[in-house]
Length: 128
Image (cartoon, rainbow, N blue to C red; front, side, top):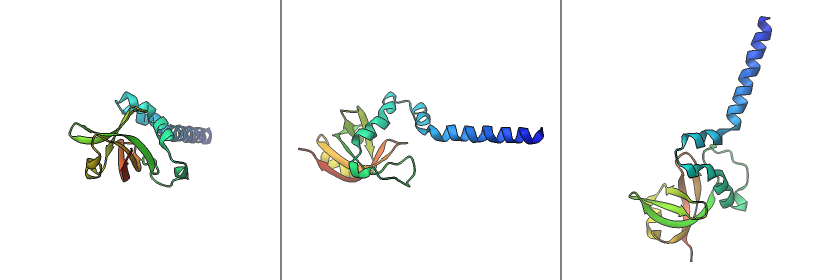
């Protein structure tokens, strides 16, 4: 009887761990008060470059390099990329790289930190 209970508890623990690992995006959306955060996975899918689809061994909270387009604007003394298609605002890790593009449409290549919605800029260029 005791052996049966140990096996049952072990199976329950494995099942709970599997469910917890299978739904990390749900936990992120619940912790974020921003209602537009629910569209984040869709935004990342639509912005992903074909060459960025390779498997990644990086931290699950940071994506491969993606292309983001939008207008660079000032928001509460910080520069952000305002994407009109997805209605998302992305912060920049290096404000000095984005400063020359204030008020302009820009294409930003970088890695997105999903916890802070921050783009780690690799390259930024103006769109014509």
